[in-house]
Image (cartoon, rainbow, N blue to C red):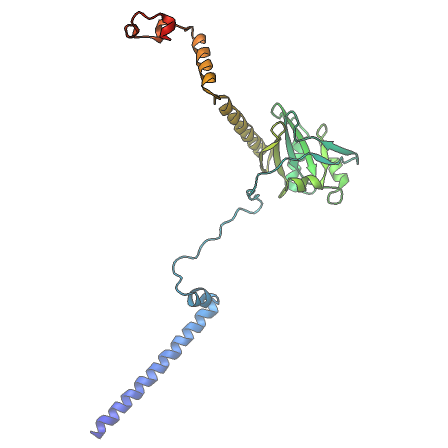
Length: 258
């Protein structure tokens, strides 16, 4: 009996040592995991039971302007020329559209546009170009004067950049004068890309106007339009083509049938 008690005591002691060893091993594993991922305890231990993949952070490629949250408002432009003359350009309410090109004298990407604007731009009819740099306190006046393309107005105006909330250079905004609205805007890295942006904005404008023309205002206007289309096709009031089943009208006069 005494031998059995001794044997049980030895077994219990060994099991106790084994448990202590396991606890130490588990503590060491947790310590090493914490060294690898210090935020692991906070992210999964305290807040509980977060499982599954970590959410991805979405963004845009560096150098690409973020979409605006609100519609851009149009403003007139006031500033000075590279020669120091004060100028003002009416943008809102102008008879055509104005392409505002926001450039800098120290921007390498802007250099392509400075050079392109010195050649035949072949802008769409009714579109004029206006180049805008920041004011004399933020630009090299002599460098702007050197880059200014002949025949293209250049205005140095930090206020214009602030009014249009321009996020970067180069940046372009197309303003429709009669509607006093911004029709398109965006960053571009080449003249070809800018032409595509300009063409898209003008196509959208034409499509919008086309939809407006095709939307009659009332029933009388719709009837006049139908009459005009029939007259163009040589079909007048009482024409037999309008009444393929003449018997259905009996002997009623043609005018009454209509």
